[in-house]
Amino acid sequence: MTLKLAMITVDTTDAESLAAWWAEQTGARIVDTNDGWFVILAGGGVPGRLAFQKVDEVTPGKNRVHLDLTADDLEAETERLLAAGARLVERRGTEDFRWNTLTDPQGNEFCVAGAE
Image (cartoon, rainbow, N blue to C red; front, top):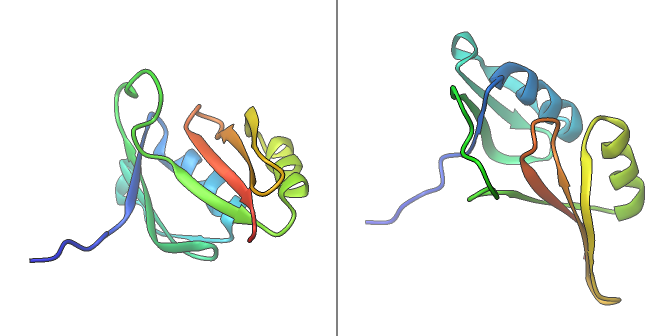
């Protein structure tokens, strides 16, 4: 038996607003809302599906799962995300490979690297 990745799911206290934010950032579209408790994105820059599940409280501490994204212009994309409500955690890497760790508006960490 082989497992297949169905989607990446992020816990959130407001699934609809966080899904809308990520849809705008990636060019994806919301394909299902399930009355706001489980919102699914597809298309755009999202391979497969990305879901946001409404929970009463998010688990404290560092994410157990995070998104790794790429951009042709790392710094320009980082600035665009910051202007859209993301927060910068840290700029990282070496001369050979750089990435920035950010959080979305609800504090979920994700990384953006320069395209290889």
